[in-house]
Length: 400
Image 1 (cartoon, rainbow, N blue to C red):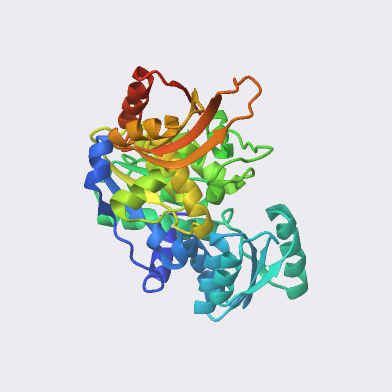
Image 2: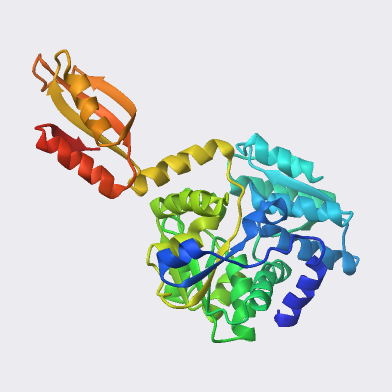
């Protein structure tokens, strides 16, 4: 692979995907101390960058006259990318997805034109089923990341960034299997070695981070993160090799940082971003990367977050940012006690969103109760002020 492959991929994609321009963010620039820009692939066709690699791979196959039948295994963005690209190119796609895949994702994949086969309880099982069907159908398997043509397609993001912002100093990229980071870092470093490329993984799925720092291909036994799009325990061998050659550093962020960043993106930028897509910005905002005074582009890699999951992420983000807090209060179980406590909370301009009595804990006196409260406040400082004022009034408070 070379830069020409990525530039040719950009030509294939022209007119077939959205031209998502790099945009500046005054809010995040002020928060991070750098000149921060966003590459919003959450607004891309199919809601993810994955369509780039899938389309480039399939378009090249069609140019070479090699196949009209393709197959892939995926529970998410790759499935929709392959389905959309195959429909556009007049090819037939079969996507094997785990049985546990949410109906919304299955419907979206079918809506782009692919046949969906549900098989297995996890990705590895549906991957094995895909390989079996590949032989039966004499189809071409489209790997989600460990393929040069797929990597070249993802690398078109760097091609666009360098055209939109020629003086970019740093590009921050989420990484799971590594296709996106491998493609972006390859093009950016070969076009302008001065550009720093930083990869970001979730703490609970850090195989590429470990591979980078050990300078050797490494896998993990399990993954545990809300960022399902980058929850990969076996990254690509080709991608890891390219990353080790071209990336300047790899860092991790925790789930709390990711959830808080999703909430910030909703509030400040009106952008719906999935957990994996928010990892890059989370790294910058939480000081994982030294980017002060630099022109930095964070790639928001996707926006396909389940509606049923958004409220959990928002809840987590509110807690992380100190907007929601939980505590328990030991108090007398007498008339007027609850009214007095809630009045103090009201005076402090806090809002009670959940309350629960506990009268049966073993070490309670007969005239005592424990009150568990969830309270909405403006900030961590506001919450600390509330707790301080309640303690001054004699309440025995324990944070939960």
